[in-house]
Image (cartoon, rainbow, N blue to C red; front, side):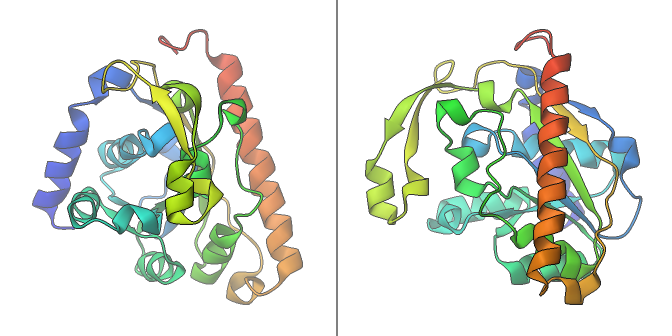
Length: 242
């Protein structure tokens, strides 16, 4: 992205920071250069993701790109807007190319299942079927930094399910939650983001083909992410005040 486009995107995202007052814990651990795979927990409808991009840019001067579900890129206007905000089609090839170039890349292994989760699945990581991010980090030789957000599953009231989109898209993960916010906006909950240390996975590019090693790293990162998330929730005194 050109600098002017980056600044424009950050300014647009900045218009909404007064509403959810994002706060970032541990961003001082971000490497000043080189590739990093950022891995987070998706909130309802993914409304929290742009704050990560802006927070990292403000604190480090580094630009983050995100991999998005291919379903988000079906309509030309949405594709244009997502590209302007720094999103990439969520393919392994795009991710590997970007990390190999030494950039920051943000992914949500839960994907649509995380963004469209059922009410009872709030603040749980939906990573049981998602191991591609581990293989991507190994192939790219990139460290992983987890970032867990507390508040992102409270941005809307989750009232139930709408099954029609899943039938249209041909996959149950696209069942839509029936959400209620504050009019068309999210609820003004406070968002707190907790970042881990950079984690270098052992095994190198050839390790990506070792299913036992991939499973081991996946279980470790999943467990650490859950622990970070629960610790953040324990610290929170109020949904609105953090």
